[in-house]
Image (cartoon, rainbow, N blue to C red; front, side):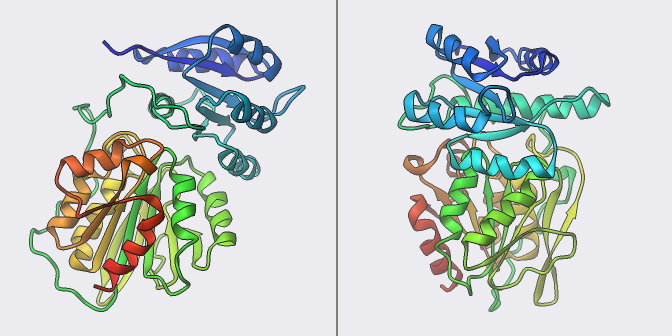
Amino acid sequence: MPKSVRVLIIDDSASVRQTMTAVLESDPDIRVIGVASDPFVAARRIQEEVPDVITLDVEMPRMDGITFLRKLMAQRPVPVVMCSSLTVEGSETLMQALEAGAVDIIVKPKIGAADHLAESALRICDVVKAAAQARVGGRRPRAGMGSGADDGKKLTADAVLPPPTGRAMAKTTEMVVCVGASTGGTEALKDFLVTLPANAPGIVIVQHMPEKFTTAFARRLDGLCEVTVKEAENGDPVLRGHVLIAPGDRHIMLERQGARYHVSVKTGPLVSRHRPSVDVLFRSAARSAGGNAVGVIMTGMGDDGARGMLEMKQAGAFTIAQDEASCVVFGMPKEAIARGGVDRISPLDQIARDVLWAANR
């Protein structure tokens, strides 16, 4: 039996600490070993027992979360998940947290409609378990947790759109690149995109991230890259030199009209436990682009994208998985490889080169 993931919750709100404890301990694979109202209390707790994962509020008295995160990463690296309210203003700060070494972002749970709270709890628990597997500051990933691929309750992409017709589409001159990533993906995507030239093929990305934060993420990347990066809107065209990032809490699908591609952005059920789902994007690419597509699957826990990548390959696309050594969490690429959906396994620093080669082959 795998050991439970031990979590320390740091938040100045007693009600948030209580709610987070209840949410996390609803998962039998997670155990809350302590709570702290500020980083100074947390530091004493960590001296007593080092947790597998820390959930960390951004704004706290005496020391803010970002400052504590930087000190922690320098002295005793532990996977940290930032916990924030759902605000556009806060999302800019959280981008700094990801740069400083945070593994992922979750939104503080709010009591509301039962289905919304259930989805929120599902994401929080999944992110914490993924963080326990993360490589942080040379730390070895925690052993014992599965990929989540055997959860029979998960909806597949069938819940959003039908499977590809089965016949590969003939190649045309325009190529489109579809990318999926989760835990560790924000920094991996940055490393990938900053190396692309301004005339790179059009790219559509699913990064598992809460709503509102994808806006700040896209803006941050746009300021770093030669390609133009934006959060996708329904009907946006897929153009050379442009990158579209799926908005948090919305599925994104590639659609074709004549020789041109555009995206459809819409809500829907969680697919492979996610919204947006990589499986949904990849299946839509298999249906609409076939051999005109390149698929890339990057770091992340679970199996979202594994089915869709196999469908892309079967439809004639060239598919690439990030290698284990460069992944923060190897779950998603590992599942795609295991299903036979991957043509090439590449380290992160070679994925851009391989994408350009595949798009021009």
